[in-house]
Amino acid sequence: MIEMLDEFFKFTRIESDEYPLQFEKVNVSNVLMDVISLFYYDFILKGEEPSIEIPSKPIYIRADKEALNKDF
Image (cartoon, rainbow, N blue to C red):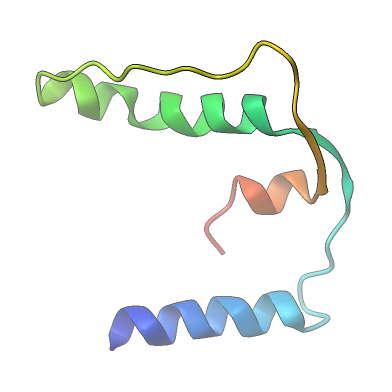
C-alpha cells in the first residue's frame, strides 16, 4: 500500500505544474546504458555478469532527459 501511494504521489507531481517537463531528443540506448551501469556492481557482487545487447543504431524519443534519470 505504501508503494502504491508513493507511486501515486509521483504521478500527481508529474501531472501538476510543480514539475515542468523539458522535452528534447534523447537516445534511449544511452539512457539504458547509464541505468544498467548504476547496477553493474550489484550484479558482480552476486556473481552475475549481465549480457547486454543494445542496437548500434541509435533509437531516439522525445522526452525529459532529467526525468528519465530521476526517481521523483
